[in-house]
Length: 134
Image (cartoon, rainbow, N blue to C red; front, top):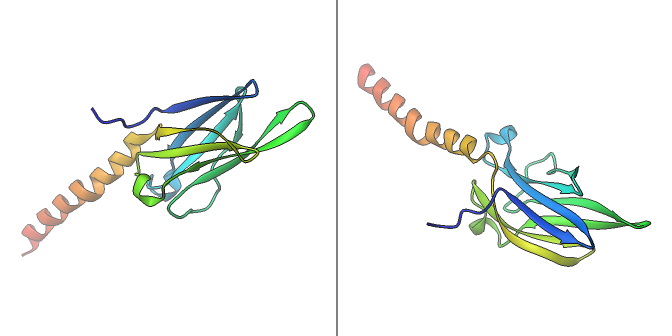
């Protein structure tokens, strides 16, 4: 069976647990995805509120001691590797790579539902309508 990714990725950086989740967005009919980041059990960041190009990224902060370190999770390898159900990602904190992997969108079923309507139901309805009309 093909590896379609896991719904949650967990990485540890200097004792901090960083969880990454991927969700498709209803704002764009579930055809775009964004990362959600939790640090030590607290959701600290979500995707930007605008449409991105072939990759997506989410910036966040990790408080360690008296310092705030900047982190980023981003999809990698461009459009060819970012499918509407999954994406490869890279996690960096302060510019250093902490981890990478493959994530599946938590709400993948919504994306498949929209694709089913667009590519199956709509064409069948149009064919039926055209048959009745002509």
